[in-house]
Image (cartoon, rainbow, N blue to C red; front, side, top):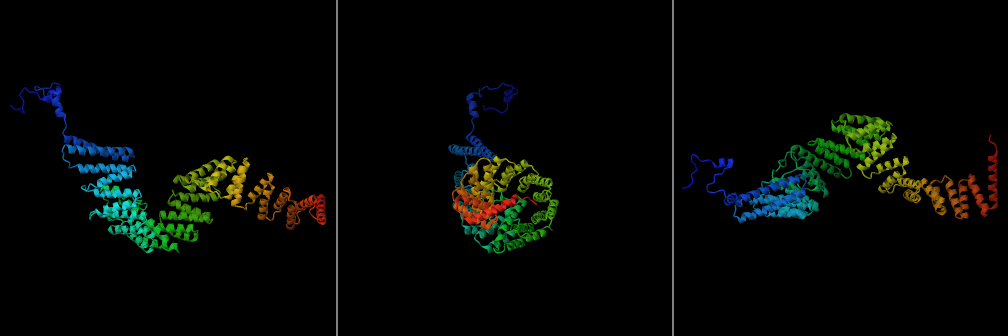
Amino acid sequence: RPWTSVGGSDAVSVATMSMSGNTFDPLNATSSHINSVVREKSPREIAGEQELQINKHIDETVLLKSNSKKIEALDKAKEAGKKEQLLRKYKKAHSLPRDNDLALTFATWFNLARAYEANDMMDEAIESYNFLANQRKHPLSRRLRINMGNLYYAKLDYSSAIRQYKIALDQTEKDERLVAHKIRRNIGNAYFKSGYIRDAVKSYEDAMSCAPDFQTGFNLLVCHLALGDLDSTKADFVRIVETPFKSELFDQDSNIFLSDTLCGTQSEMDGVKKCNNLDSYTKDADYFLLNAARLVAPSIDVNDWSAGYDWVRSVLQDRHESLAVQIELEQSTRWLKRKDFKTASKMLRALEKKLGETKAIACTNLSFISFLDGDVDAAAEYAEAALDIDQYNASALVNRGNCHFINKEYESAKECYLEAMGVQGDCAQAIFNLGLTNGMLKLPEEAVRSFEKIHRITPNNPSALYQIADIHDVSDNDEDAIKWFSVLTARVPTDATILARLGYLFSQNDSESQGLHYRMESFRHWPVDLGVIVSIGTWFVTKKMFEKSIFFFQQAALIDPTEIKWGLMVANAQRRIGEHQLGFKVYENLLEKFPESIECKLLRMKISFQFSISNLDLLTNDMLILQACRAYLRAPSI
């Protein structure tokens, strides 16, 4: 008879006996053969486990990428891809249902493509996306054309990128206006990078007609500006200003593939991240508006740049007053750069009446102007006014320190500069001025540290390099002075003063050839430096190269014609090389200019006696004059 589900009164449950270690098995049903048959899994169960492993690998890939382990992430993605292929073959061999295969294949290959992207393997990523894009049964396969376009864009293959974007645009549904808008903007970016600016304009205009936003409007303005169409540029700027902050584009698309693609690769003009809330969207809008204003203002009127700023401010005034004030500040700064301090001061005094950060900036700039005008007291007052509004204003602290420096209050100036550095660690003005202050306080080591810090912040800054070299030179540290002056000459190879100082340093350290080289270079760039000219001529005399010294003493005589000694040096060099007749003529010419020079007459008489060059009357006259001079010198003083 068949087994019943109810045991006898004396039956003991198998589970109870198993727990006690005594198994009731009258038919030997727990033999190894039967047990192995029971433990075998069905093909459906095996396929399910493999699918779980694939999903686990996908999750691990995402986690590794987020931890910047890109190579390990790619390995996991490849492993998931291999297992997905094996799973498809297994299901086919066992005639298992394949309802979920399309979604799993899409997820696996998309994950692999993203891993290739993370490792900058663009061609492999495009191949993976292309495989998925051909799987037209999946509802999101058409979105992958956007990713492919972005990869071609990153490879600078703009024509292929445009082709992929257009395919994606053709496959977009009518109700996907935001997707279509962003694709059109990407097409415009690719056209712009390719140099087809008019095609870019058409794409941007289509995007703006679909759903206007600040970023696309800014790109359109740049294109019209590049084409020289000022009327369209002004119209674009007005359109950007009138764009509402809360638009349809603020409602973010929740589709992960869209956010991964359209925010993944944009042109340089599209450098702002995707907005996540209204505050960030407002900041991005201000970014594009401000940059658009900066581009438009100087371009409106070539003959009157200030008129362009006035027009931009009038457009911004109603909807974006804070940006209008910022443009006014930039306009005043531009007047400063043009050294029109009067107009700049007038604008800044008007801005000083406003509150908050604007007043602080205006006071800081007015302090700077007053300092340049020499009104140190007014500069200090404006600096204090700026610090009353914002005590962490590094520029105002520097201005206050400068006022103390001019008043020779070096300790107070040092405190201001240190405080400015505490507020802004890389404040170059504070660090440089601190070095100057330490130099005035006779603290050369601290001064050098300050200037070396400036050198690290702004490499090859000539002012910092000169200060370092000068401090070492004044401190008689010739080796370091030569080192830093050499670095400076590499940065400023035509500065005659630096070349001359380097030449003197080499000469003092027994490197006469190097010293002569740098002094000759100094003379080549600035041939009127009397000190350099005389030092070169003297060097040739000490080396008994009198013929070469003549040229430099002649140059010295041209530069300083009121000094007779340069002519005497020329005549002496002529005598040394045997050109006595030329030397005699030099003496005669000198006596015409300096008839009272006893030294010149003595030398002329000497060369006349030695070589019988002059006539007897002239010699007698010279002798009488010399005898009178000697008698005068021997006479007792009254």
